[in-house]
Image (cartoon, rainbow, N blue to C red; front, side, top):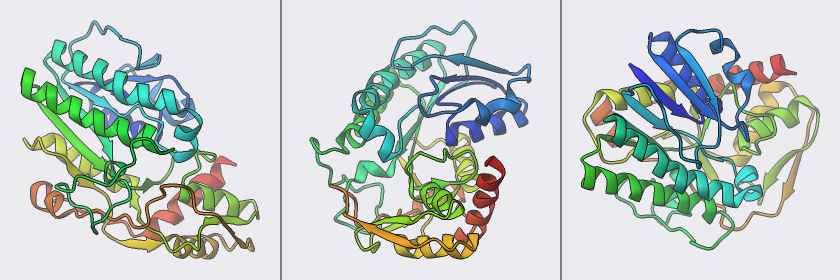
Length: 309
């Protein structure tokens, strides 16, 4: 297959590009490296089946080659980045999705949208099923990311209805693993880097807010399974194991044998209190569920960060 991946040098996108190349596909990777890293795709640059285009996906692009799939993963997905670049975040979600949908339509390719659990906002139901419409502030500090993804979904379904575009939409919950950026501000990378450097682990509020964490290999398997089924409604991809943030902090301290302490900071505005996917649809439709435990995944992620230093 001939596959285009936007955000292909990012955390999830780089793993996806690697798997596609391993399968013998031809891959065009698009990234402007505002959050992605060339280190993530270094081993792919020598492959004749891999081509890198360095550009911002919010600017229209033309691709000469035929395409079978367009995967739109370009996004500033961590709070640190989208709070620093709110307009770029909106542009990648709105203009970037529009450009990718237009490209898929032109090439008669299938389109895959990387959506997010953030479309549910600070949820009023738990766990979150795909039918839930969410509880999102349209003007809060996180709205640049939340609303850009909600609009991206709306645009994707408009193309499906008006142009009969073949689409897949994954609502991705917290994921982690190798190729995360050390400074991306996400929970797992934050804690691991702080622990390895002997710094205080920064926990917001009392650390009682919950998240579920899916190891990257499990997530990639779910994405690949979505390509194989003809199911066009959104699917949650994530772990159904729920942890308090304070529990994750203590687990990282134990796994790194760190003497770091925990420092409590004020809870950010609009920070969701509980977050866990209902993955019953993914289990039924894809025959998929995560298999890597948090302890096992953290060990592999810690090894990656230790090797990166």
